[in-house]
Amino acid sequence: MARILLVEDDFQVGELVRRFLEKEGLEVLWARSGQEALRRFWEGSRPDLVVLDRGLPDLEGLEVLRELRALDPLLPALLLTGRSDEDSRVEGLLEGADDYLGKPFSLRELLARIRALLRRAGKEGRRRFGPLELDLEAQKAFLEGEPLRLSPTEMRLLFTLAQAPGRVYTREELLDRVWGPEFTGSERVVDAYVRLLRKKLKDDPDAPRFIETVVGLGYRFLGE
Image (tube, rainbow, N blue to C red; front, side, top):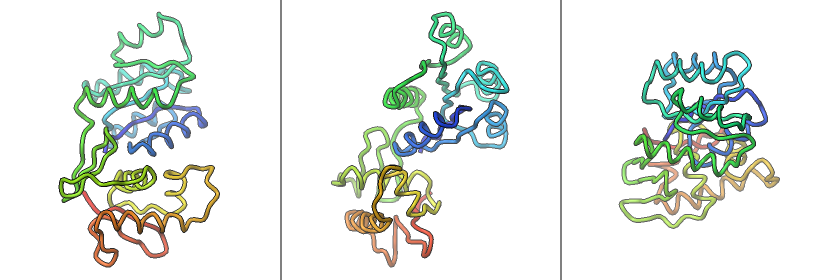
């Protein structure tokens, strides 16, 4: 699962981007300042790509980019900015950014640019969990080499669980990530979809290979 370091101090923008990217199967580390971004990097949370706002409260975005590139010269970087003039875009690209996106921006365009950068860097592809293979780019799943016929909701649920093997997701978290914060139904819809997904995965809940029930908490994906 590709790991994205999102450096954005605006809470509303950061939360919107984080939720969207996680629903699309990406792991997101969100830092709200340049120093926090560098600290996460120094502590070993090495990302596959950084999405970096130029207008940070403590450090200028290009300064953060220079520091990150000193630690990892090959780290793909996408700059976000409210500046629309050509000089600012050129400056960012000359400083080593791989792409540039002006605010306000479309979440779908942001995702497309991230996917393109990950492909170019060889970071995007497939993940295998025994007989189960997930194609992150095409959003497809294969069991023992055969494509799984999953509904969009089943696919989102599977990719959400599989993005962090071993992590327990509560029903509330899964509702938020898979169905969205506007969903007003019961948490039991998660249980119903897990049953459907297990059936298609040929996964025995009493001896699970993929999805384990954590009593009183929720579910976790068994894997790496």
